Length: 193
Image 1 (spheres, rainbow, N blue to C red):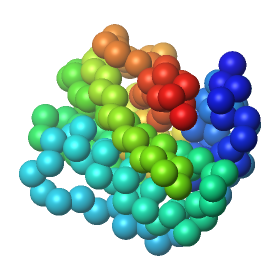
Image 2: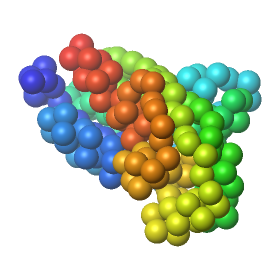
Image 3: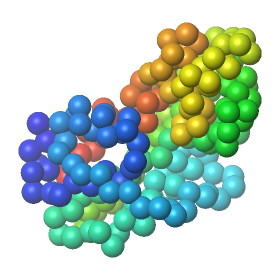
């Protein structure tokens, strides 16, 4: 459906297997290139949306040396916010359990920033989804963390896993965004390239 992209060598600048799967399902031909050591810091005081935009733009800057006339690069960053606190990837299982204890019984926001860049154009979007968790027992949290090892996930959970079925009461916004790539909004953006 995205025939306008046929002339591009599309690079997904992410090691996330979830992003890779979602982009494949969208029907976009691409290859994955990952770089290490990309600065994912951000200035204090930014809104969650601006934080996600800032980080994915920084990722895009790191990939600029790969740009040629026919290259299109997609970068993304997902953050989980509880109030004004950004919950990144947990350091270890104990940290993951603490994050999930904080999320239990509350509504939080998942924000994904996406940057699409070519030699002549850079566009960035940010998409926010509200996610409400049911209360969780310590045993439920420990079960999830022990079995699924969500150390590579912002906020210490994957909605597509057991915890999504057992704990997510409702979402308001894009489900795919919570997985890590707002494919509807990305599709609309890619149509303009």
